[in-house]
Length: 134
Figure (tube, rainbow, N blue to C red):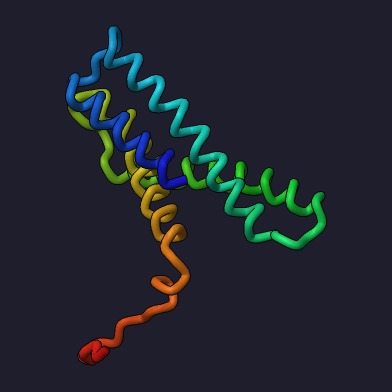
């Protein structure tokens, strides 16, 4: 999931660096990054749902994988819709098309990285005003 989000962020950088070029190598690179991101994010969210159902019946895990795909699509629709409504009409024109994609990529990359942290790092909650004494 994090790698797919990263691919969408890099795709945005490629498009921004070429000012929205729609032909040649930049367009090919953006297309490869887009399909790679879609595959990695869909697999990542589905894998997360399957991992949450470890030890359950196989049919339930298959349904979890399908639910993960649905969750990925819904997250894209919600995040993209929110960011496009927030940004509105933009100049250059390609930015309005890409702002939802880069936002979704950034959110899913962040969530994926937070989930991938070691369990010990997730369980540590720093307390305000208390020095860490070891």
